[in-house]
Amino acid sequence: MTIRLPGLADVHAHLRVPGGEHKEDFGSGTAAALAGGFTTVLAMPNTSPPLVTADLLRRVQQQANAEALCDVHLYAGASPAHTDELPALGRAAVALKIYLNETFGPLRVTDLSTLLACFRHWPIGKPIAMHAEGPGVAVGLGLAAAFGRPVHICHVSRASEIALIAAAKARGVPVTCEVTPHHLFLTQANVPRLGPLGDMRPPLAEPADVAALWAHIDTAIDCVATDHAPHTLAEKHSENPPPGVPGLETALPLMLTAVADGRLTLDRLVALLAQNPRRIFHLPEQPDTWVEIDPAASYQLSNEGLLTKCGWTPFAGMTVRGRVQRVVLRGKLVFEDGKVRSDRDVRQRHSQDKGGRS
Ligand code: NCD
Ligand code: ZN
Image (cartoon, rainbow, N blue to C red):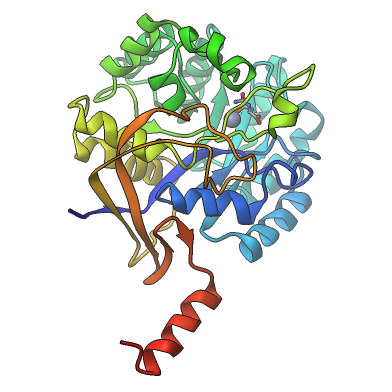
């Protein structure tokens, strides 16, 4: 059986350009995106150097346009030293990312005056996304309420956070949020087995937190986003392992498994992975674009055959139901049977067709 879904949009991925190309690049990251049913990816600005000036952001966007296999839009990073760049950055970026908490890379905002500058000078109509953990969520909600402008809270992972967001939404605060598949399918109980491959920001939580996220999957949660954060196995097994796990290739099979298990409907999956991301981030339409899946295919996720450069997944060994068979982007077959169709492949197939291949 084959079902057609719209092209998915991931609003939180790290494609590592510039400066982290040994972990991922626009070619490998968007190949992984297509393998996972994503035709639009929003790339995070915690690169080296980070995307905090309009000049750099424009250059990197041009590189993405030349090298990516699907649509890539770039976040700008908020930085205390570059608040004067905010209006120009706002013209070039899809959204602003503010990091309130410690994570991979040096981007951080810890002072209120930089936060105020962001909310005053970031263009109205362009989203502001926040990495805000624990009490930081209240900071984001307070700013959304005070300035009356939408805030998107990244990778919500705890019961208390989703409870606060639900309460703020009930009061009419303009807030949206995302959760990641790893926070929906893994807990602290998996950490002894996974070791550094189970370490990310926010860290994996307790079963009660995971239950609270699932309890809000039809209501307070707006998006499922991967937080695809590839690091090499050598880096993850080093003395000072960086936080982060890849996720572009596993998000859709995991969420389809949840549909098969009756935890959400297929319509809700499409809202979380395609419609809401496109609406919240004002993403352009992709005409003649769809993903064909076999919802009945049952198989084990594996490190073998992944298209992300890092070559591993924290979900290896997990049995899932639902496989991406084919991806069509703007009328062109770009992914089929586990492989990206390059322009050359497509051209060759067309000329063979004309030559009367049976
Ligand atoms: C991300 C990374 O590696 O860039 N790591 C992570 O653990 N999520 C940074 C981030 O999104 O916080
Ligand atoms: Zn991230």
